[in-house]
Length: 151
Image 1 (cartoon, rainbow, N blue to C red):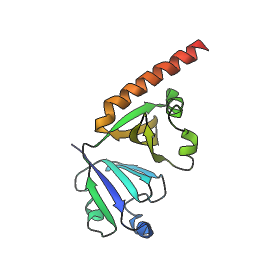
Image 2: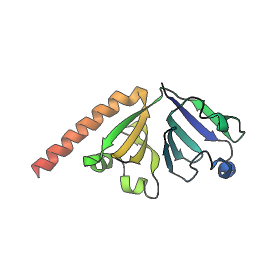
Image 3: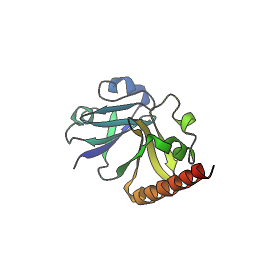
Image 4: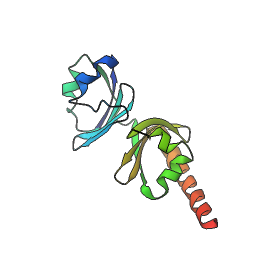
């Protein structure tokens, strides 16, 4: 199983020192073969689906605190078709992601991180909310499709 880690900067003034390893711009996302790096809130990152051991360079520093959250976050993909409309039922998508590639949000009252991806949007939510979020997405999608066909 690939690992997931949350990082918290101990001092926001130290962010430039993290630039080689982490995206430091607010809302930045870096996708590599080694994992997905989401800077979802000031001084906070989710490094999703990374290979164990990749964090060694960061863990040896006194700049960040790390937390193994393997199994806590689950990704849900939202294909481009209707994704923006679906998200807009819960949040002002354009305003929230203006100048950003990801953000921490509440989605159907569940904690989540939303990010642009090649297929539309990717959403990470806590495993304990996963089924609830998937069901809510499907119900909302059905309402949107019904509304489009009724117009």
